[in-house]
Length: 288
Ligand SMILES: Cc1cc2nc3c(=O)[nH]c(=O)nc-3n(C[C@H](O)[C@H](O)[C@H](O)COP(=O)(O)OP(=O)(O)OC[C@H]3O[C@@H](n4cnc5c(N)ncnc54)[C@H](O)[C@@H]3O)c2cc1C
Image (cartoon, rainbow, N blue to C red; front, side, top):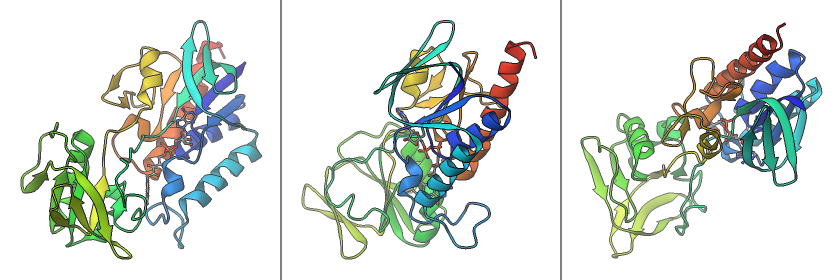
């Protein structure tokens, strides 16, 4: 049985593992792929890099660092967690038992199958207003979504962009719309441009000029695992206290799956906090 299983090998999960393994806990990290960071081409706002690193390089370095310290890294997809007197983590390959769990599975950024969406990723299509709003100063942009996550992205963009439109792609808006936002509920046919995104083409034949479209549909699916264990969630975010503890003893969460700021710095901090708290939790439980 593992002392702790960390689900997710992104910045939150790996950061947590550094704290648990260095405190002497048997630590297993289970991860499916590179997560959000894999898609970040250039990181300019994380401490310590004069030359902005690629997201992929940060992930690889983090995993190598964890392995070097003795963390067991398992590649696999977690399909569920059970709890009796211990946690059971079910993966596509088998089951693992653990005394404590940290969920660090990130936020699921959903991309609809609209022509042009992959083609213009990083060239006008963005998944992170906090990261990329800076590049769209004084430009016309749009947010694709209809719920609280889309509202959050609109509020980030409004102070810097010339105009912000909300594209719901056929849905009705389900969040309060900030003032001065044009809401377009028409279905989208395609994102178009030349080397970079220039416009959104709708199925009724009309067009909207846009230098940037920020995709903000839904948020994490990560909370499903937590919910099934009886952990409190709000929307798709897992509710944690200041120590990253959920309401289930031994179950912690860190990073994008806890909502709020979706940034590496916050994921690394929350991972460190969750890792330290698991150490305290197990020491107390074992009476040492
Ligand atoms: C295009 C893009 C650009 C970005 N640019 C920046 C930037 O410039 N600066 C910045 O600070 N932030 C940026 N971000 C945000 C940043 O990447 C995230 O905030 C950060 O990666 C969150 O870390 P995390 O560990 O919580 O989640 P993630 O990095 O998403 O990692 C989650 C991990 O969980 C794993 N996982 C998920 N579900 C399962 C499962 N069922 N079983 C097993 N494993 C699972 C995934 O494989 C992944 O390894 C960007 C994000 C995107 C998408």
